[in-house]
Image 1 (tube, rainbow, N blue to C red):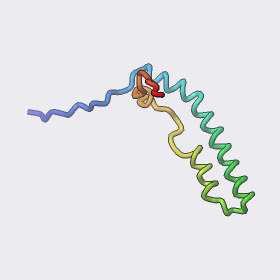
Image 2 (image 1 turned 90 degrees about the horizontal axis):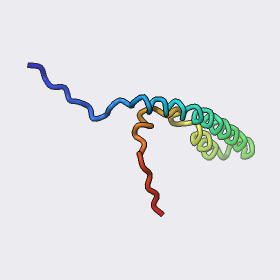
Image 3 (image 1 turned 45 degrees about the vertical axis):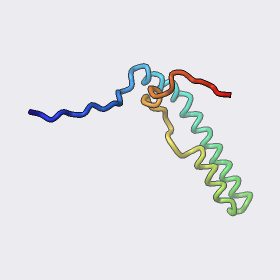
Image 4 (image 1 turned 180 degrees about the vertical axis):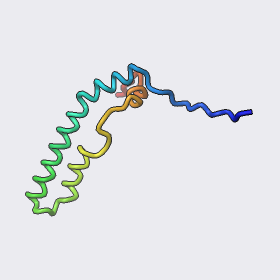
Length: 88
């Protein structure tokens, strides 16, 4: 008698989610690079202008654009809401 293996409730993303993630990454990754670059330049300029006294603010400019995931995964595309309801 073999023990039963619990089935995970998460399914693997389908082909559509993988293709969608690929297309989204074509725009998302270069856009993210531009935002990261602009934030880094702004952080450097802020450090120069304030002679290093605004390092917390400069760090936040850098972190906002450069930290976090740089790609969209197929799982994120598959888990996106199918319908959006706007509440005004």
